[in-house]
Image 1 (cartoon, rainbow, N blue to C red):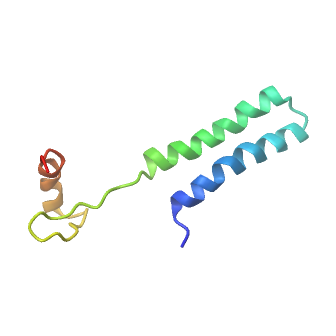
Image 2 (cartoon, helix red, strand yellow):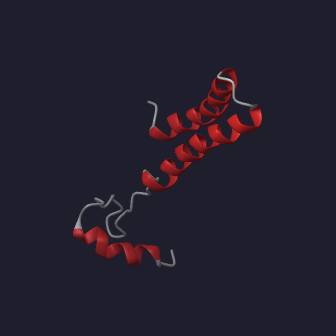
Image 3 (cartoon, rainbow, N blue to C red):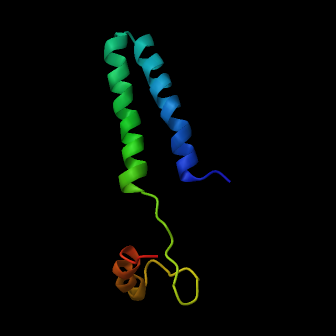
Length: 86
């Protein structure tokens, strides 16, 4: 099963090389087309890191099961889990 981050990792070299080749074939110089293509690549990376960032499921210390991320209890336990010494 292909995950979102697998697709992003595949699109990074494709967008950099493909857009550079497309812009060069359209008549732009190589020194202009590489920075333009890299801005699209940086946009992909930024989206994967900050907009749709990875998340770690939190587990309950008592039961060991995952805590739903939308519950009020998980929001209260976030500070305790983040600063626990374990």
